[in-house]
Image (tube, rainbow, N blue to C red):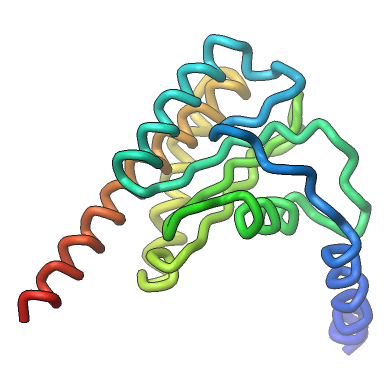
Length: 172
C-alpha cells in the first residue's frame, strides 16, 4: 500500500519534470557526441551508416552521448523517450542514449507508427536480444556501436516487412 501511495505521489513530479525540461535542438545528423567520447572515426562511420538507413529505408536511429546534466526527476529512460519523440523524423525510430564513461548499459528506446503496429512483446524481445549481444563487446564505445548497428539492421527488416504487408493489402 505504501508503495502504491509513493508511486501515485511521484507520477505528477515525473510529468512535471518532463514538461519543464527542454531539449536542445536535435543533431543535424544521426550522432550527437559533443564530448567526442565515441571518437571521430567511429562517430563518422556510425553517422554514414545511420544516414543511409534513414535515407534508403526510412529508419531513424539516433546515437546520443548525453554530456549535460539531467534533472533528478528525469531518468535516462524518460530522456531517451523525449529525444525520440522530439528529434526523430520517420515512422520507425530508435534512440541509443548513454553518457561519456557510462556506469550502466546504454538506454534504448524506440517508437513510431511501424513500432506501434508490431506485437510489443516481440519487439521488446528483439531489442533485448540485440542489447545482450552488443554488451559482449570489449569497450563501452564498441557496445554502443554494436547495439546501434544491430538495432538499425533489424529495424530495416521491420520497415521492409511492413512495406511488403502494405503492398499486399493495396493489391487486395
